[in-house]
Length: 139
Image (tube, rainbow, N blue to C red):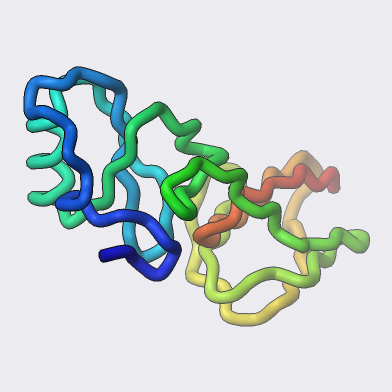
């Protein structure tokens, strides 16, 4: 049985319980790689089953990869465009942070910023399954 991304279920692997490897556990809803662990298959399988996660042999780069058809693939970049102090083409819904402080979820595909004081403002947008987007505005 496979998930919506063509990934095998944990039960479909037939590694011996004592087979030791590096394993990546991933979110079966989005395919995002969440954790890596080194150890026997039995531990990886039980961890995946208890956490309702998928598992695949190998070590993913957790910031860059997701799992598709039992392979690590690059996560897509966000299509955001910066125009002055406005950002457009934001995938919604998503989360926004400015200088490390989180704000309400974003529900529109554009934001125009008005920064209160001179300085640098690092804006980050998190939206699964995309790679984290960031830009520093100078005011």
